[in-house]
Length: 130
Ligand SMILES: [Zn+2]
Image 1 (cartoon, protein in one colour):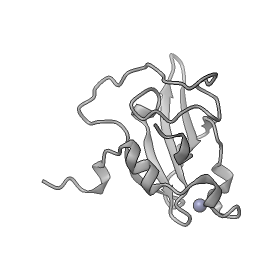
Image 2 (cartoon, rainbow, N blue to C red; image 1 turned 90 degrees about the horizontal axis):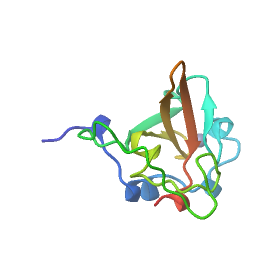
Image 3 (cartoon, helix red, strand yellow; image 1 turned 60 degrees about the vertical axis):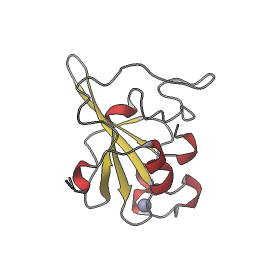
């Protein structure tokens, strides 16, 4: 059965293949305003027409993706050099979006706190994907 692109579950290899490296994207593209090497809060999710949804890192069968984070030496959740560890929090619940024009990639998910929701976005640096 073909489930179509909308339900695509992506792997680390997909990110490395499909997402343009940070250095190769034109600095004057419309997506440049979104660029943030680490996680940032955005007022609302960013989507069409600027970005095109590539798929999700969350497996449909995974009702409760782990909250464990994976880090390299000295990195933390907010670090610009934090690994994009697709099997770990928060990447395991992210949607992957590509700029329609330059193929720069972005991760987005929504953090649910006790009294708030917070939309978060991070640019994908393919060299950080593990
Ligand atoms: Zn772009």
